[in-house]
Amino acid sequence: GAVVSQHPSWVICKSGTSVKIECRSLDFQATTMFWYRQFPKQSLMLMATSNEGSKATYEQGVEKDKFLINHASLTLSTLTVTSAHPEDSSFYICSASPGQDNEQFFGPGTRLTVL
Amino acid sequence: GQQLNQSPQSMFIQEGEDVSMNCTSSSIFNTWLWYKQDPGEGPVLLIALYKAGELTSNGRLTAQFGITRKDSFLNISASIPSDVGIYFCAGRSGSARQLTFGSGTQLTVLP
Image (tube, rainbow over all chains, first blue to last red; front, side, top):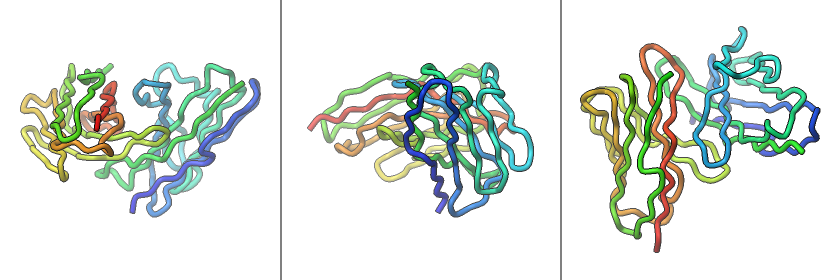
């Protein structure tokens, strides 16, 4: 149980294009999902907290107009990197929690490379 | 903001040896978690700690929640090749659901 999937697992795009990453909780409902970014040999940095049916809460320094988050259902959250640039190249990981008292379960990550 | 200092940054050990790594915080946490991340994958939860002083085991892994609530350690006994990976501590404070991650410990197990 508690499986989280991400799609795609990797994506290569040209600078200036937008990329959408999906995060799904496969066997549980998640009112809250989290989006992280991880650069090579670094730790996970929380970008935003995604709440079903409401606006995401972004961490300080994360541009909400560049990283659009939609959490339209209890099993799906999407992260759209708009007008991507090479410096946005990173490993994007989502996590989901079945409930307030449950820990986060992480997806397998999406490797984004912007040329 | 909150910071977690994790050490060591990397370790090279012989198969069969025991390993210890730890995290310290500048502030109090009410939850400590230990994750393992394999290359190109998301982190996988190993052990969760919820009470100061708590000592919890998961197979060859043992972790403790420090009495001061500002530190935690993870021990791996009798290491095997599949223990290779990056180990992260993570903490949560107050009623927040967000996690703060340590910088990670890269573990290499030599045959």
